[in-house]
Image (cartoon, rainbow, N blue to C red; front, top):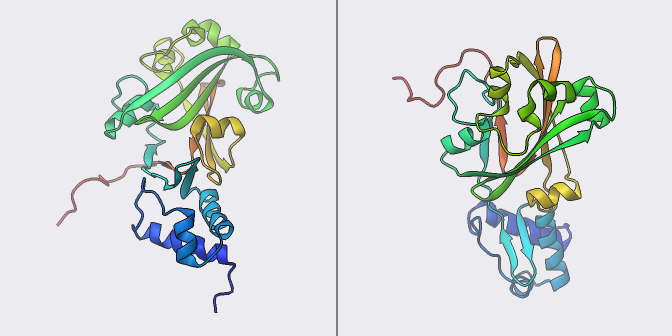
Length: 257
């Protein structure tokens, strides 16, 4: 005998069918009324089962439109090549990587002067509340929200590289701009964490209930000084990161006989 609550039985059965392709990404599930008949359960029980799948990020609900299987076309980011100037690039690394993957990039952008939070000040090695230049991007892949990227630069650097504080994007990318100005990034330190999104992050990234965000903080160094702190917030359901370390064979090449 199945001792699971009835709503869990509903959720498990629908999850299996979604995983097996009976309901492909973008398709709509049967109505609550139809599912009530199928599972011999009340509409409240069915709704609880559906809400469990919503909380897992597997389906989404829309007022008056029912429930839809979420699309999960994952974008893979090679974090070790991101901003590496030895790799061919046209413009910034984000646009290059997305375009090379056969996808379409777009973004909104703003620049502002803002006081350093404790998190940013600790990484930039500046005083709490000191002035920083924030360059903020809200990025999309094929019109779907992909990430937000907030890069903070210390005030002293903005004085040496004034385009950092100017409105509008830097076409060649900030890393290349700084290198051309004699401030070349010598290395970086990465931190990766996951958590549930804040209300603002849920709104900007269109994240469904139960879907976490991936936080990637990269602190860049030039010689003995910290030159920037970049905090990228990804949708956890649509992104995957990888790194390449050392000399590797061509992983995408043909198999050898």
